[in-house]
Length: 80
Image 1: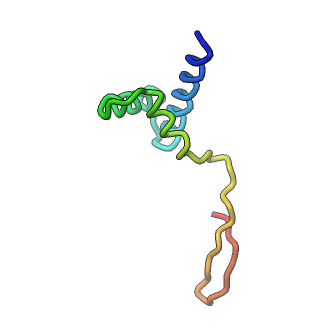
Image 2: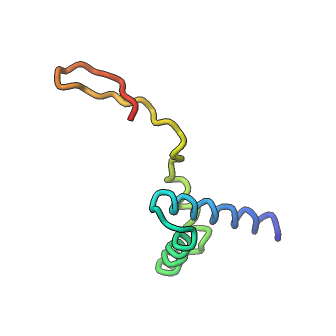
Image 3: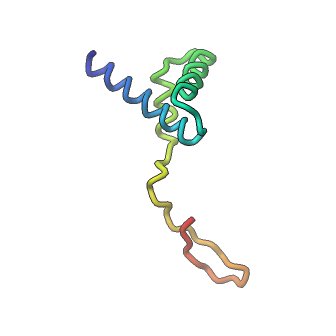
């Protein structure tokens, strides 16, 4: 397996993981969804996988503080 094939495989595996985690899918179902999307829109599996990854936010990363205005008009910084 070449270095390019390993990178491609890694990207597809990561995309499957993201879909599985966010969509509560098994890895087989996540792969099936990636494959069906790629076929439907005539894209390569690697292209679809790379489109999934930039939009994913790891669930382990803490959310940034968010400004929230209370009913009294006071502004608080709250972590969601």
